[in-house]
Image 1: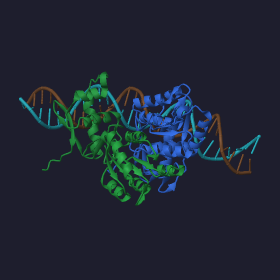
Image 2 (image 1 turned 90 degrees about the vertical axis):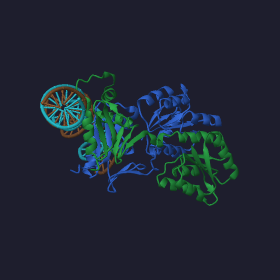
Image 3 (image 1 turned 60 degrees about the vertical axis):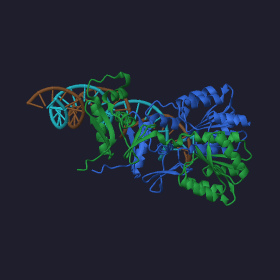
Image 4 (image 1 turned 30 degrees about the vertical axis):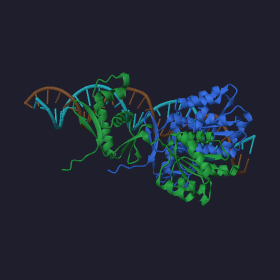
Length: 228
Length: 228
DNA sequence: GCGCCGTTGTAAGGCTGCTGTAAGCTGGGC
DNA sequence: GCCCAGCTTACAGCAGCCTTACAACGGCGC
């Protein structure tokens, strides 16, 4: 899962990146409103952690723009503005949660995960398709209850596909999920990862198929043999 | 929108009911864990406001049961237990938000509405005919809850037919829907797409028929076998 | 420091399956 | 019977995807 952290205090953002990393998230760090705007227009994140006091503009404005274009990405506002009106204001502007500095990293992660589990997904548990299981908390795939060894890229692709069970995932989304802002891929990298993941899954006996929908993306589903 | 408030302090729950009423919500007030359990099993609420310190049991247990049976109803925990571990604990148990008493009614409403605006439970965004489902948001067809792989043209035709459920769709409309303004089709392309879609649907076991109304267009409907 | 090995990103070429077209077929209506 | 709308099948073109190979990189043991 890739998160965007918009925070101009370098020390704090480093701390956040580290803490979130331990919790199992990749993060893109940005320090200005302008950068954040650009990133949010071109990249899709699992969630955004947004500071309001940015050097070149108000974080709330970014949030409002995001919601104005119906972007449902969860946004957790993180700020020193702790007054009641500030909190109400932030929430009314479309924030999903509002946390006042100083805060405990543990609470941030807990609140973040409360947001990430939103689309009906269960608590930090695991997702199943046929005999394939993916443990969201430990980012660990198992087949027939046998834990599998996958490279980190393979795991990342599988995680996204599993979280998007029943939906098609575009190549762009995979790219964002894996590379985030560092998204300089001058090649068919995604295709290669999918290929490697498919090979792993079929070698290990997973009764699961990653379908290609040409020009659209990928879809993971239970393996169906045509019952001729 | 109907909310459930579980709170044993009568004065506070009256206050909540009043405040939420002004904000435009109906509320059911319950004061015990036992009552809450029953209500949550039989009634579906837009959201639940849950106190933890109940006379006959722990609110967190109710929350865990709710999540255990995959009930996605937003739950906002409202309690005097304000410690960090309490908050983290509550959120990890499946709460969507955690508010510590004393609190401002205004913030409660703002946080509540942040939860209610979640897109998570938009069930109205998919159309059903027999065992065929079409998710408008993701443009994804499913048969018996199994996501189906369709080409983008097939999906486009199905989308239009499903959106026009109960009405006849003319060939011209299909053409416009697929090609837009660039509508240069010097062939029977539409007929071919419909044919391919019919084949897909019947191969995959959809209990649905695309009827032809000569000289008019197409109509999708539940499959009716002639009871000979 | 050095070699080993798995992972990662790139590149090139082959292949698949979608697409639109056309041609022949079917069946209803007159 | 005849006509015409729609059905079915076949096929070539092509973009998108798959597959394979390879070199660079980094971690690890020694």
